[in-house]
Length: 168
Image 1 (cartoon, rainbow, N blue to C red):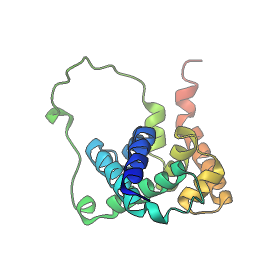
Image 2 (tube, rainbow, N blue to C red; image 1 turned 45 degrees about the vertical axis):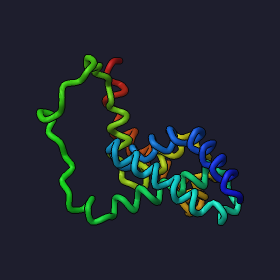
Image 3 (cartoon, rainbow, N blue to C red; image 1 turned 90 degrees about the vertical axis):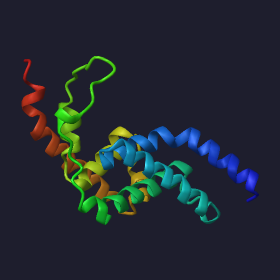
């Protein structure tokens, strides 16, 4: 592929998928700066590997797979294992806008799922991927995806049961 055509492809891919990949990476990493780095690394890897893209899947699936693997690599890195990234709320700067307290019970419940179930829940319910797309991204059987989603539903139902019926 000519350099100009590749640059056009990259610009279009960034426009189409950057925000979605950023949300996905943030969900994996829990840190905005790390998520931005992961998305940048994802597009860099895609740029380098574009000639090897066989179009077995669509562009979204291919980029999502790269992003998921990039996030997993970051989480396994020595820096992540040996760094305390927790922040005290007292040390946070004052916000520039008033704080809008929302009920984030569902978000916290999803984010507290075990990694495999959280991954399935985020890709399916948050990013709207089909079971077949998820199987290609994660390179696992469709039946495994189905099982993980079923387990995630069970765990969330148990976790959110009191919250959901609280007002009745």
